[in-house]
Structures are given as structure tokens and as C-alpha cells.
Picture 1 (cartoon, rainbow, N blue to C red):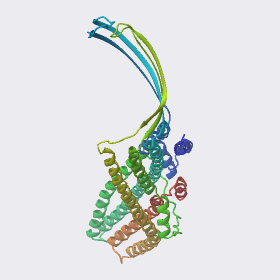
Picture 2: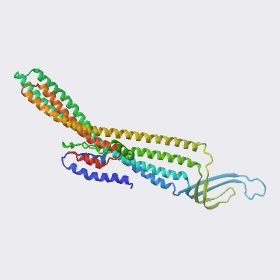
Picture 3: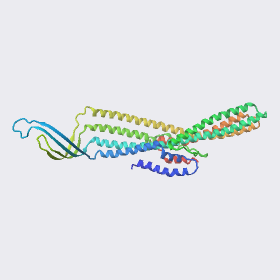
Picture 4: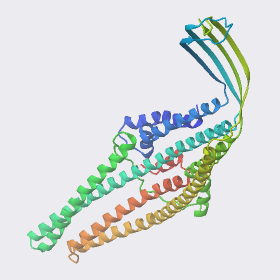
Length: 448
């Protein structure tokens, strides 16, 4: 079995071991739990694995190009002839002849020199190499898709939880405003403002619940089953600055990105196609051996025969003119190679763009986490001060509502920034082409 298939098989076997404990208790599902489910149930990966297994058969097809070709043939015929001999002294009588004939034979042909077969063998090996890279790319894409859907679901879940908490805080403020109005210590404006905020957060809660359900369905499309409670980012998460600069990441991407390598294989395949078509102008040489037995119970001369024939030799074929088709195929292959080289450049530039974008986004998220941590601390202090001012009568309930809203927004943005930081690590390594399951394990240790 090919090493790439062994790799996926081992991953699937490991999945069965890892997933079982997660289903045995009520602990939150971690990123690794979800990824292991995806390994076992994602249809996109299953499709890529089937395609890779099919591509491995090209190896046997390549070997067959220089193996002997053996064929068996057989036939039977019935003949009726009206014979009229001319001239004198013919010893055979005129008349109608009816007779049957039977024949069968075996032919073996061993290619000795066929340049196009050698080139085609190289092409088939290139296609297998390309299929292996496509399988590994599908596995890398699964890691990215799983992490993206996991954190999308977490963001939606946190947004819903924060809105629910905000609704409870606004409801408390609304009840207090109504009570103060009833005793004459506040105006109806405070109660109306709190009511408006409460009605708005109800609408936001409905939208957040819908978004949360959609993200769960998106995750289910990868894993095959709806997720339970997901493990969240630890509160003490501390982002680390990037050790390598952008140029270093770009260099790694140029060497490791699978999309570039797949297009390079396509360019190699196009060059081999030129060589294969050019080989159609060359002679071919085969060793041929055959054995035939034929029998007939009559003939035009009136008697039958049994003939056994064995032959062995070599056969040389020299193509002289094919109507210009071979030359046309060469020109077509040359143009296709140029297209393949252009596609390599497209893949290289897209990889550079993806790497630069992922690097800048990750750098930004690192700074954002620190900024939102400070913003959260400041928002909490502001809310405490505003609440104290409201209690002593120098601030209004609207001020308290505004401070609460700012605090919840800071919490939401901080959580989102932390998720974007962790997801940014995966995106950068996926863009470069060096993402592995150990990277998911590193991210998983930041969850709890």
C-alpha cells in the first residue's frame, strides 16, 4: 500500500481511539475531538482518499506498457463456391463446392523499443506524485476547515451567551427604573430608555441564536454529527509574537506549499506530453511470436487440410505520414506546457498573497488581544464608576446602560480576537503548507 494511504489509514485508526473517551462523558468537546470526528466522517476527505487509491493503479498501468501482450483468436466459417475451371488438362471438376473451416491461434508481442511508452511511464508516475500531493492538500484543508468551523461556532456561542447576560443586566436596570419612577425618584425617560434597550437585545438574541444554529450545522457537515458543548479558550491565554518575519514565511511557502507543487507537477506532465507526441515520429520495434492451427473439410479443389503454423521474429514499424496529426499534437502540447507554467506562476503569487495576508492578520490579532484586554479592564472600571455615580444620583440609568453595553462589547471583541489569534496560526501554516495535526494539538492545549 502506498505511504500516503498508510498515513490516512493510521490517522483514521487513531481517530477511533481518540473519539471514544470524548463520547463517554459530558466534558466539552475540544478541537482535537472535532478534528478526529472529521477525519472519520468528512466526505471531502473520503473523496480525496478514494481518488488517491484510484491513482495508485496508474503504477500497474505504467508497468504494463513494457510487459508482453498475449492475445488469443478463434474463428469459424462456411464457404460455398461455384467453380468453373478454364483451359485443358485441369484435373479438378467444375461445380459447386461447400465446405467449413476452423482456426484458432495465440500471439505474443513484446515491445522492444517504443519511446512513447517510456515517456508515458514517466507521465503515469508524475500523475501518482500529483495525486499524493492532492491527498495531503485535502488533509491540510480539512484541518483548516475544521478549525474555522470550530471557532466560528465558539464565536457564535459566546456572542449568544454575552447577549443573554446583557439581557439580564438590562432587565434588572429596567425593573429598577420602573421602581424609581413609581416612587417618583426618576422620570419615565429612564424607564423608556431601558425598555428600548431590552427590546433591542431581544431581537439581537434571536439573531444570535440563529447564527449559532447555523454554525453548528456547518460543523456537523464536516463531522457528520451535531456538536455538543465546545471547549473555550482559556482566560489566561497569552499570545506570542511571531518568531519569523514575513520574508522567512514566504521562503518556506515557496518550498512547501502543495498548491505550487501540484502545478509544478502539471508543468512536468505537460513537458512529458510534448516528448511523448514527438516520439510518435520514431520507429517501433516489437518481438512477435505466434502459433496458429487451421482446418478445413474442403476447398475449391475439393480436398480439405489441417495446417499448424508457428512463427517468431521481430517487427519494425516506421511511421511515414499521419496526415499532420502528430505534428499538430506536438504544437498543442507545447502550448499546454506554457499554460501550465502560467498556472505555476498564478499558484505562486496566490500563495504569496495568502501568506502575506495570514501573516498580517495574525500580527494584528496579537496586538488586538492585548488592546482588548486593556479595553475590557477600562470598561469594567467605567461601569463600576458609572454605577457608583448612579447610586449617588449624579449619573442616569442611560449612562449605566451605555457603560454596560460597552463592557459587553469589549468582552465580545476580546473573545473574538483570541479566537482569531488561534485561527490565524492555523491559517498562516496552512497558507505556507506546513500545517500538521501537531499544530492542532498545540491550539487544543489553549482550550479548556
